[in-house]
Figure 1 (spheres, rainbow, N blue to C red):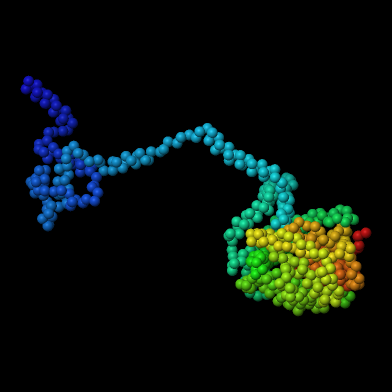
Figure 2: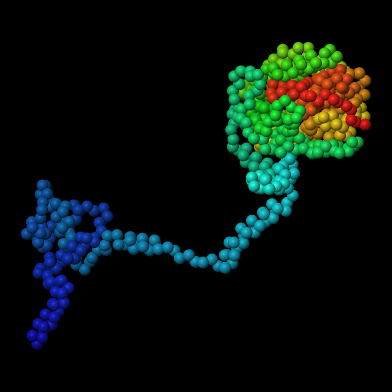
Length: 594
């Protein structure tokens, strides 16, 4: 039996040896593997250092460290490393600590495992695709089906036309660009959307002293011969024009509509055949009307509680303008009285404080012009207007004046010329509410947009005059009223509808005087107030006139010749047209009306 047992023991020992184990020689050897494993795997106890571990000489002797003598510190105390060694070797067998970080890594693995994404139910999958598709389809259908505007009332211009196809335009990209421009320009409810956008944009932008600034502005350091022309950009804005009626005898309003760009009242230029200079195809970024180039715009709230759009004036001596009028005087001799009436714009009277360095004195330019005239009578309308600055003599949302301002200027001219003048009380007053003029189109100011004004004009008795309309070469186009019905935004164009024409007016004034007027758009509002002063009036715009001006004045038998315009035209590029019409070779003029 003993031998069997020995065999059994040997058999049991053999596998142990094969596994690399041997029987422990003492208790320390028995616990050492466990202690060593604990040393490697035991986590640090929170808040305990090695000095805090339990220690005694007996514990050290039990594990056979240095024959029972532990390493001591200089103070006689066991060192921290000795305490650590004893603590490790006496760790209870069978009570193994969890390896350091094993719990956290297990949790990490559990957390890092990606959550299983459950597929959407079929109904939600369909809705996820259908809803955006339906919204897109509705917007597309609305974009295609809703009516597209042809003109913009707030911008006062005709919107882009669909391009005509040609092989050349297709190859050079003009056709496709035209299609893009057409759809971009003619978005349904364009004005309404732009108004909403303006309200948002009004929260941003440049301001100075509580006012909005539009366009580049420059400090005015001296009076230039002509006003500054800061930045030139391409003018791709189509003008609002409608063909003149074909019939030669009509009593309804002419078809010609407002002729404006996004911020102007006229856009047509004289053809190269009748001008000394080629037609320019560029537009100044600060040009708010044909030839009216500003030094920038200011939108500000004045003491009347309303927002105003005011153009800053670059100044100028007006030498070209004065020289041209002197040429008229010499060519016409003493048979015709020649007058100059240059009037300021609103900035002369209502410029907010703090902007004096950015806007020149209008009166200084007018005085400069008057000092250069020879044999031409200046009309001091600018001084007369000072007496009425507490009245609405200028529009707040447009670059023009109100007709009441034109009335006071016309009255000053009649007094200077020694003529009778009809009182405004004898005329019919017409108020147009909700007027938003060209300054909004230029500045896109949300403050202006939210504060429209009333445009007020005055109509003489309809039986006291008759009008004949001609093109700019004096070909008769029809009989129409002087006052043409217009949309609210085009109210200033109610006077003759546009500038690119010649209009002859006969009245029952009985004074024996005849007047020829060369003007810019400012002069349009004056004309009705002359119906009581002159028997016959010819209204011509110097920018579009295609005849020899001196010969035309002689043809009419005029007794008086008036040049009336704003300061921007007199010191700016519009004055160049005066030399053009003086030198125009077309001298044969005949009456074509019935």
